[in-house]
Each structure stands twice: as C-alpha cells, then as structure tokens.
Amino acid sequence: MSSERLFSEAQRLLPGGVSSPVRAIKPYPFYVKSAQGSKIKDVDGNEYIDYCMGYGPLILGHAHPAIKMAVINQLDKGWLYGTPIEQEVALAKEITRYYKGIEMVRFLTSGTDATMSAIRIARGFTGRNKIIKIEGGFHGAHEAVLVKAGSGVATMGMPSSLGIPPEFTKHTLQVPFNDIGAMSQVIDEFKEDTAAIIMEPVMGNVGPILPEGKYLQEVRALTKEHDILLIFDEVITGFRLAMGGAQEYYNVTSDITTLGKILGGGFSIGAVGGRREIMEYVSPAGKVYQAGTFNGNPVSLTAGLATIEVLRSEKVHEKLNGVGNSLRTQLEDIITGKSLDYTVAGIGSMFKVFFGGEVHNYQGALRCDKEKYGQFFHRMHKDGIFLPPSQFETNFLSYAHTQEDIKRTIDAYEVNLS
Ligand SMILES: *Cc1c(COP(=O)(O)O)cnc(C)c1O
Image (cartoon, rainbow, N blue to C red; front, side, top):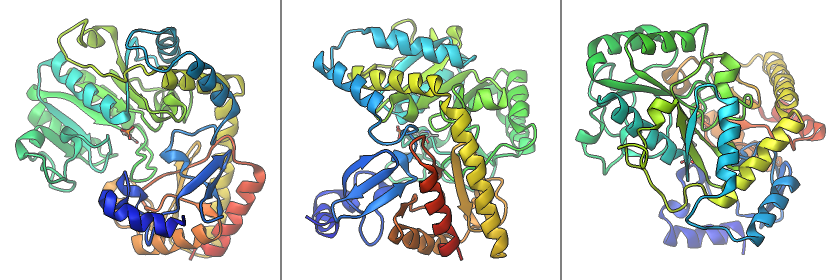
C-alpha cells in the first residue's frame, strides 16, 4: 500500500494519523519500508538521506551491525526476566565512568520517564515543591513540564495542554535561556521552596541553541549557593557531544542527570542518575517511589552497551564533531553567498539553519520564518533529504553519513535555500 493510502486509513484509526505529533508531515508522512546506515526507504520507492535519525538516538546510523549482532545474541537468551541482569551493572559502570556527577543510576523506559523521576527525586530529597525550567525546554510529555511559554517570569506556570489541572503546574516556574539575571530574580523570590532547576545544557528541541559565555557555570554557582539541585536533561546531548555529554564538553557537573535516546542504541530507554546521597532516596533504597515492568530492559541495555563500545573504540565523537564543524562552515558559506538573513546553529553533530537572525532563547526561535522553513523542508524532501519537518527540531548527523551524503546534502541546501 502507498504512504498516501496508509495515512488515509491511519487517520481513522490513530489520532492525527500518527503515534507522535511531529510525525504528522503534510500532506501525508512517508511510511518506511527499511533503513540502513544513513538512508531510509519508503514504501513508495523513494530513498532519503536521513537527518532525523529517530530524533536523536541513532548516532551510529540505522541497523548498525555491531548493535544488531548484540541484540540478536540477547534475543536467543530471552528478552524479559523481571529480575536483575549483568548488563545493568555493566551499563551503570559505563555511565558512572563518564559522568562525574553520577554515582548511582536507575534504568527506565523513556526520556519522559527519566525527567519525571528526576523531578520527583529532587522534590523528595530537598523537601521543596517548585522547579524552574527554561522557556521552550522540552523534557517529555508529563504534567510538571507541559507548561505554557511566555506567561511572564515568576508567575504560576499554566498548563500548555488540555487535561492538566493548573494545580499540577503551579509549582513550575520558567525563565529564558542564557539569562542569568532572570534566573537569579526568580530564585531570590522562591528559593525557600525551589527544589531544582531542570534544563537542557544545549537546547535541542527549539534549536540547537548553545549556552553563551559562562552561563552554565553561573547557573551551577547560583544553584550551589541556594542548595537548589541542578538537573541536566541530557536525553539528547548525553553520549552525543562527548561520551560524558554536555557536562564533559562544557566541564560543568549537575547534581542529577537524565539520559535516554543514544543510551539505548535505538531501543527505548531512559536513565536518571546522580550523587549517591540523592539517588539513595529512590525506592527500594529510599522513599521516593519509582518502578517499571520494562525498567532495565535487557534488549535496550545490550544495544546501549554495544553503542558505547563502538563510540569508544572508534573514537566516533572526534570524527563526527569534525564533520559537523565542516558541514556548518559550508552551510554558512551558502547563506553568505546568497545574502540570506539566516543563521547556522549547532555544535558537534547537531545542526540547523534558523530562518532568521541569531537565536539565544525560545522567543528568538519563535521569530524565525516557519512558513519558509516548511517550504524548504518539502523541497529538500523531494530531493531525497529527510530533515525534521519543524523549524524547531535539530538535525542529527550520524557516524554512517558518508562524504558523498554530505556533498549531496550541501548541494541540496545550495539549490533549495531561499
Ligand atoms: C526526547 C527528549 C525527552 C523525552 O524522551 P522520550 O524518550 O521521548 O520520552 C526528554 N528530554 C529531552 C531533552 C528530549 O530531547
């Protein structure tokens, strides 16, 4: 069946025809037949160079042979036990080796799970209620973090989704990214009842937007001063910017870290980790309740371990970040050559062309020309390049992208950017 036919059936059976909102590409999304390396093929006979990469997890590309073999070996032995396995000890060792701030870790099933647990742990540990998040920061789809943007600093957070009582979000405060003054002001007002700040150290869901100057260090100092826990949500950046994520890259350590995406090598996973004294609050060691049937899933742990092994033995980050730098320079040259008022953003293997001037925070990202980006997305799609359909989603390079892929991609930007 064609993508068009499948989608028309799907619209009767699935809300919006999809299983997650960003996939609802207009007029209809392509249905995937298979994927390998940097390429993804649809049921209509088209092939694309993929820069979504499952929205982040596939740093080694699709169907990497080392991960595939490891998973097949695991499947031969069964795939769910409801009792501990060696891989959770092994993967916890890898995480604690690379993340200075993590001494203990709980394995979960998604990034959403991880941030939800991180916030509960922070509240349990501090005995305080409020959290501060960054405007436009995405931490999954749960009550505490689905809060409307732009409602003004230091006011009660209002739900950004139907189905969430305002009482559930009133403890969530928001501040703009890269604005230590605004954060300091909110902390001054609410420090007695603030448990934690949760933030993506590099914003990945409205950008990428990088922390500027000493912003992360200043946030770290401010949280220390007021005994507020700092949660780095590294679900995107963990194992992507470096083995130790953005914390290694920027040399700033958080109290609690959330991981996901790459950690599962393309299988569903989440993890929350932190200092021992904090993590010992988690059940059954402590009184912050957390549990899950699929926690520490053998297949995901196995795929994660295989991914980390390849990242380490092939020094993937060094190479991949180099490709990212070169790609961004070439994109900048195209924009300069065409005298466009656009900005190339990104770091390491994350990149994006903002259809507007420099972006420092969420409000800046909102000023970009979404309509023009939409047209550009469709032109790239026709030329066999699969970018995220939203101006706000980051493009991801993988280790599987070849020099030829990059060249084709640059050529397509040259032709289609306007
Ligand atoms: C994707 C993402 C999440 C949610 O992870 P899921 O596995 O989709 O639940 C949380 N935080 C950040 C920064 C993310 O990018």
